[in-house]
Image 1 (cartoon, rainbow, N blue to C red):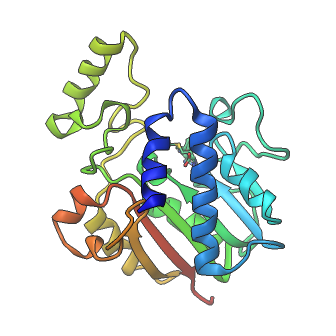
Image 2: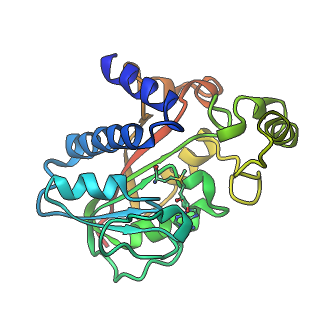
Image 3: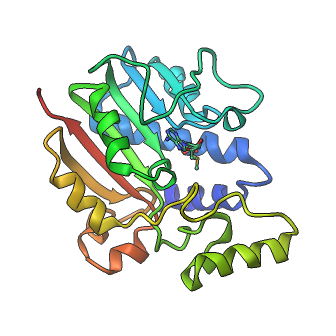
Length: 236
Ligand SMILES: C[S@@+](CC[C@H](N)C(=O)[O-])C[C@H]1O[C@@H](n2cnc3c(N)ncnc32)[C@H](O)[C@@H]1O
């Protein structure tokens, strides 16, 4: 409960104190990876769609050989981690099976073709390696990102409201750089794959019943907030 409250408080200050918010989130995600896969030290970890690199930096602090891949130079910001690569997650400039851990936080809802994106994450992960994928599902209270929760009443209306209220156009447009990804259909797609096995599907931030809530069709679309999938690459 303490962990979830700390994350919630940090999210509320995401805009005015992104450093504190994302550093905390990165430590939390690294703890989650280590809970499933043991210490990261010495492992090769890929952070795909890693933005300005908070997660990569945290993985490096823990001794991992961590590499950031981010397609948008603007998202990298002014101080990206050393050796950051401008690259699209659909087509990573890497050989097959190079990573012990492939990590992707809150990217899946920003790609038009999540299945192809997942195939590429699986390709670059070694057999038995771990894949961490989280995303904000569309019907989550945060599904509309900066125009949430008004997305429940329609994306266009929510964007227009954002513009009226802030005087700034919203960063996200549904169907361009934000897509309505649902938990039920994503779980069906992942279970049907033959390149990964599903280890866990859980709410990323919930303090309790994190796996149980994801098992309740319908309710999970609203109550999960953010889905975390832990996958293992199948032997080839
Ligand atoms: C909400 S940000 C998440 C950043 C960071 N991973 C985090 O959790 O804070 C979404 C990121 O996905 C990236 N992205 C969008 N399309 C992508 C693609 N095809 N391949 C890799 N990253 C992509 C964006 O550039 C952006 O940095």
